[in-house]
Image 1 (cartoon, one colour):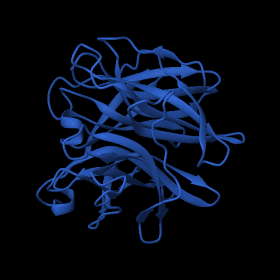
Image 2 (cartoon, helix red, strand yellow):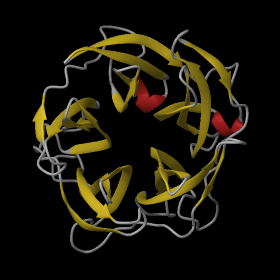
Image 3 (cartoon, one colour):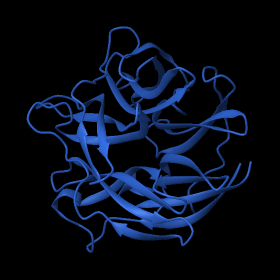
Length: 301
């Protein structure tokens, strides 16, 4: 695969900075508004470092931002709510005529290690706001997901919903890095996910901390992109292929850091989507989204 970087398209700066979006535009995803425009949603940190959801509209034909939402799409929870420490966007999918955003719900209990569950919120496109669905929550269990969960990605294929998500086995495998892998769960209704199992193979010291998978079908093959790192190094973007959504084979992503600039140290949190028969990728660079959002297009497979 050969990707062409089109440059940075958005970042939080003094012109658009507010108390609810003081820094970062991480975990970008998008939905199509019409044949030309997309709406990009991202996780942004407030002055306390807790993440909310912001958005902007982008013209694919003109390659420019055409509007920035001045208000938050969704604020993190409070008190003992499941997302009291932040919202880490997974993806947006339509279920029975409603659009839902599945996301990582951050909690940082006092005196304890941070942890995550998987929640979802209903998107109202008319006023561009989201409200958490209190009827859905996916937490750890004793068998497959033992410690903490992260960024989900949900699709519907045939009669089932498939969710790929991050799962922590341990915060420290012994080399100073957590073991956080990508698992798969299946649901008939998009709410009750069962049959959890490990998905992408890991390698200690090289690829043992994974994050934010994105899955699409392109040219009769299922494809997955994700962030990964080894022993406390910087995130890279990985890639895998499958014929049946189950057995994934890791391939070269051929998407690397630039020689200098905003994505010279790290590339992470990819979101790949189709537009006019081409594949595009939204992604973050240095600082886990602190330096903004970039756009790339696939030139050759």
